[in-house]
Length: 161
Image (cartoon, rainbow, N blue to C red; front, side):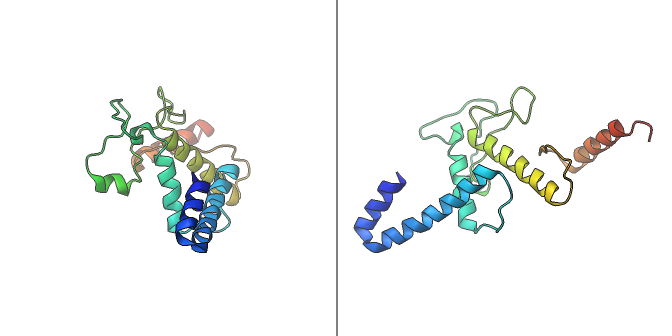
């Protein structure tokens, strides 16, 4: 699709289509680099590259498939287009059978966002100097729940404290 799109655009625009296609290839390489290495990029991304990544990820969720009407309990159904856009159309639940880290088959894009985010957090923790950390997980909880989970973890680490 990309190569054909570039060729057709170049046929309409002359050499300018090729120039634009090269910019798209550069953005694609940036995204592929993130997927390949799952580490924080050396340089920050421009907003358009971030938007393109999230559009591609959202297109992987079954509730965003063309002509699809999802009726599952976790499938995203958002009435307001403004809310859809604000959340990059990522409204499908993640996790499976009580395991929030498990890949949701109907939510490949949302699951990939979750996995990438956990990898980026782990990289940030390691960059901060905590080399012994082997894994990280992001869970959707409010502040009180997050504090409770931390305290329970500390209690397990130091039961006599």
